[in-house]
Image (cartoon, rainbow, N blue to C red; front, side, top):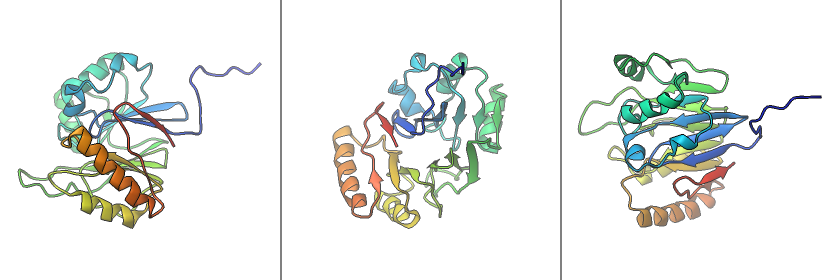
Length: 221
């Protein structure tokens, strides 16, 4: 009799957003947490106790809206051996906190590729990574300077270093099949959902499915 593991294996990717750029991505029984930042932590947008397992953490860059050390330490307190996939600058930051499980090379379902952090008026851009999961989902951190995308793109739709118009222009160039909006904590909820609807209508005219997601909502793609 064949023994089947208790985890649910599915061909459908499940994605949920937990404020700003913090995402949970699940595929083929693997669960990856992306960019656990301070906005998500302050909003208590991710229920850590409810997580039954965590296979990897992926961090695009060192700004605290993408990696907040108190948040990360709470996660690692529950899942202490979880590997963290990131770039060299984040790895060095974590090593100073005696967090030794960071690595700068991917695995069979995580790929890291350097893309520039956009210019910022309040400092020097930091090392930034485009992270691809399961060969079909990518998150780009604080960058609009990329030329390719897999089928599903987590797109930063607004930022101090960019604009919604610039994000739309890049998306039309790389042409993903699905866009998952990120990096929009600064929008009030009613404004955010209004802009989401306009983006959904616009991208729909170009054959792109824009997901107007609420915090914690699980989207299956």
